[in-house]
Length: 545
Image 1 (tube, rainbow, N blue to C red):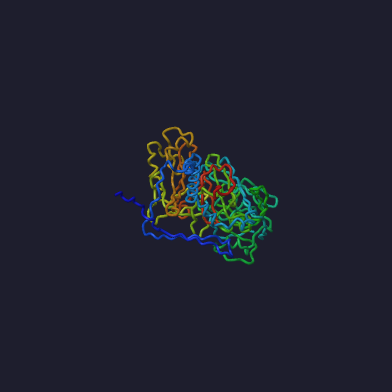
Image 2 (image 1 turned 90 degrees about the vertical axis):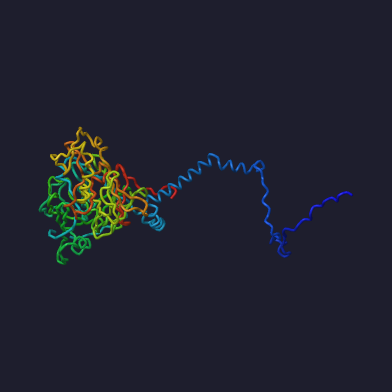
């Protein structure tokens, strides 16, 4: 009997598909498809497709992803992403951009703002540094008398850049030129971020004045500021005198950290500036008509006619221009590192780099100085002082000081660190250029001959976001100089008799080769390396912001 032919098992029902047609009255509604699974068994795995069976489109897509063009685009995109991250971490400009008002809302003001640029002029001649160089850090004090009314003059918002003249050796100061008066005359003014009041030697008549590079300023009766003026009250708020309603003048006296002083009355007159966009501006400003100078300010022949006060005080030049709606209260200076000196100074924010600067917060206190806190000082890779929990040294940025000053403990430890050069350099007490000068055991023709024997100094500030280091590096040429005898002299001095004796004062010698910006709006101090040859007007952020 033949075997019965095996039949395949009947098909099993695994699911149901329901197709719903549209209603007759609305044929455009479309069909609805619903699927139900009736089996509890796991669905079978998808069929394996051998590599040879893959579609040509899949292989083409893979080849396109691995093509050189795609790889280059991926690398470029990753590079831009990393660079954007670096900008956000190391620059505070993106954060400032978020804090600023929108361009549309602030467009009218931005269109009106200009910048004023002041070149700093080199100047030759001078005496030994221990005779000339000093520290300013002026504070307004007592009262005396001599002989007005303040007229206000409105102008469009602007910024300016002025040239800076002078040099560290032998002048020991840097100055710029202001043109003052209805028939403008030039006056050389010592650029001083540590002083509040701008003053010019004045024939009121002059009781004690140095012979300066220009004739004395001659005030008219209408130039004098009255005691009721708000700027007079600002100047006299720390003086031991009371408001005088019957007085016809506003008296002041400034005492400086080097024990020199200047006395006079407040005056107002026209100041003529050329804006960065080429416009000429005629502005009214209040300044000191100084008729009695003492100490180093009386030494003749003087290289300047007065002092340009650039602190954050309301009486400072930048603050006055801001109060008139002329500039944003931002000050910047850039002093060349080379021996010829010079550089530039600007008022306003048009020349502030939009990224790449190191920014630190300004310390909140009752003074008008540009003050911050240093956590530690390193010489090369070795710590000189600081580093302990809660330890901090106040530091002031002061262009009115020729040299840098350290508190006595930091100064002594720095001298100890420099003893590593003793086998090459011997202290020469006959060289009176500075308190400490070394004679090399070989001829020194320029600083390049000795630079490699010394290490940079680093002032370490509080970290940003607890991880990003912020430091101010002073290269050897920022704290050393070559005297006329060919010796290497230390440009950092013992600050015991200067200011309060416990503060670092960063003077011109250490501020060279950097663009330093004091933002009195954001209350920050910033810096970046620069050759200080040509000021660059900020054009905005990189293209991907």
